[in-house]
Image (cartoon, rainbow, N blue to C red; front, side):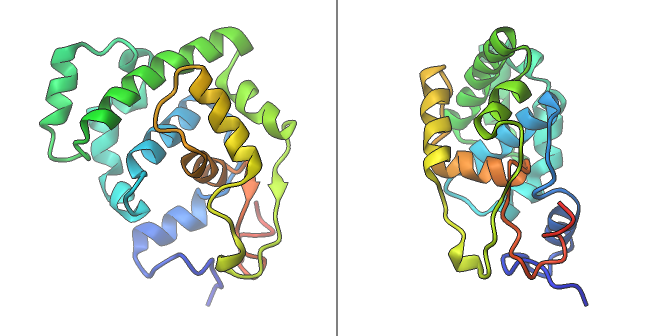
Length: 186
């Protein structure tokens, strides 16, 4: 029996996400954008809700292709708001489009979104040593700094809690608890 972080339920989808994705360093812009979209929609909801709809999001948002999303028409936005397979929050849908546009601007300025976001940690994973789930914060000063910079660049729904969740998901921080079998692997 493997010891996992205490937030993981017995849901096979959650187990697979924890065991295979969460906390693994991501440097690919397309994957970073996907996680940013999913974290945006997760705000105020449980992560499992988003995970269960992930494939619907992938289909609805053209495989998370930020180039295409940046050019969505009002007609496309309205069709997304009618799509029962995703979370139909008007502000989050519109934020995804404007975030794709801001994402591209960052790529143009820094060469890649990965170079931009990972520069905040000097390209290294911050390896925390949480003994209990309760020790892990919902946000950090670094997440607040990144959030502030992203907002300045036109991003929406990127508060420090969303950004810290993004940092955890994309492996910028290793927040597996020290007793979790994944702690030493990522």
